[in-house]
Image (cartoon, rainbow, N blue to C red; front, side):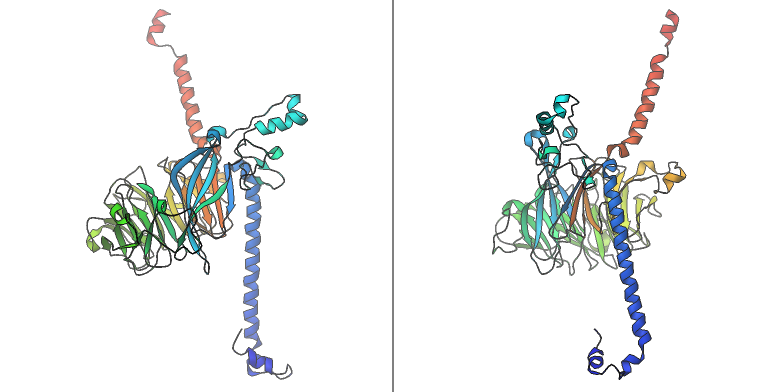
Length: 512
C-alpha cells in the first residue's frame, strides 16, 4: 500500500486530494497488475493441461513412474551406491540423498528408501482359463500376479503399478506379491543449519556426505555416527566444518579417484580444494578444516565444479562470468589454470560434467538454454550445441552405463535425455518438429522448475528428479524408446548372418 493511502482515507470522496488528480498512473499500474495476473493464470492452465496430457501418455512412454510429495522442496538428490534385496528378491531397496529447503523451520539432510521391482519381476502373470475368470479363481490369480512395470489406473488416468500409496497395491483386489514395490519413505534425518543447496556422498565411502547451505561453510557428516532421527533437543553436529569461502554456493564435487579430496565453488569467485581424510573425521567433537589450496581466476560466481574421471589431478569449474576453467590441483592460485574458455556460452554457466569413459569429452549447461559439448584437446569452439530446453539449464550429468547418453534438467520443468550417437541422423519433417535427432527423450512429469536429478548407478535408465513444488519423481523411460536403434542393428546383423549361412563356401561348391 502506498504512503499516500492514509491521506486519501481521511479525505471525503467528494474532495479529491492532489494524489488523486493523476488517475491515469493508478489505472496503468492496475492494468499492469491485471495483465500479470492473467498471464500467471494462463501459464498455470497451460502447465495443468500439459501435465494431464503427460499423465495419459505415461503407459506408452515409461516402464516406471513413481511420484512422491515431499514435506518441503529439495534442491538436491543423489542415488546411493548401496542396494538391498527384499521381498524374497523381487524388490530392490535403493537409497537416495535428499535435503529440505524451507525458512522458519528446521532443515534436514535426509536419506530415503526407494523400493523398485527387479527387472525380471516386471511382468504380468495372466490366465485365460474359465476358473480364473470366476470369483475365487479371479482373486487367486490377482494374488499370484506380479505387478507390471506400467500398470495403468484408468480411474486416475495415471500409472499406479508400484503401490504409489506408501506400500499399498493398486492392483485388483488390493493384493500383490510385492506390497513394498513403489514405496518411498524417509529413513533418516540429520539436522542441518539452513536449507541444503547441494549434498553429495564420497564415492569411496558413501557414509561420508558433504553438504552446503546459505552459509559460506561446507559441512561433512559421517552418517554412521548419527541416529536415524534426531532427538527432540538434538543439535546440529557435523563431523567436520570446511571454512574457506566467504559466501554461499552450490558447486561441490568429490574426487572419484582420490579418497577425501573435495572441490567447491561459491559466490565469492573462489574455488577451494579440501582434503577430508579419515583422520579429520575420526574422534569426537566438531573439527574445522581450512582448504589445502585456493584457486582464483573467476570474475564472478562459481556455479559448479567437477573432477575429471580419469585424471586424479584435473578438474573444471564454470560460473556467471561465462568462463570454463580447467585446473591442475597440484598448483594453487592462478598457476593452477591449465586452460580457459572465455564467453563459452551466451549466458551464465550453471553446470559442468566430464564424461566417465571418454577422457577428452565434457559437457556444460547454461542459462542460455543450451547444453554444449567440448573436447579438452581443442577448446576454440564447441563440438556440438544441444538445443531443446526453453529456459536455463541447471544441471547436466552423463549416464554411468553409456558414454553417449547425457541428461539435463531445466527451469522449463523438463529433464531431457540426449543420445550423442544420433547427432546428424536424418529426420522426417514430422520428427523434426519434436526436436533434433539427438534428443532421445523429454520427461514432462514436473510442474515446476527441476532443481536436480540423478542417474541410478545400479538400475540402468532409472532417474530420480526433484522440483521446486516439493515433488520427487523416480522414472524409467520405456525400453522401446532407447532400444529402437539397437534392435535395428541386431536385425541387420541377423539378416547378414542369414545371408552368410545361405551362401555355399568353396569346399561345398567343389562337392557339388
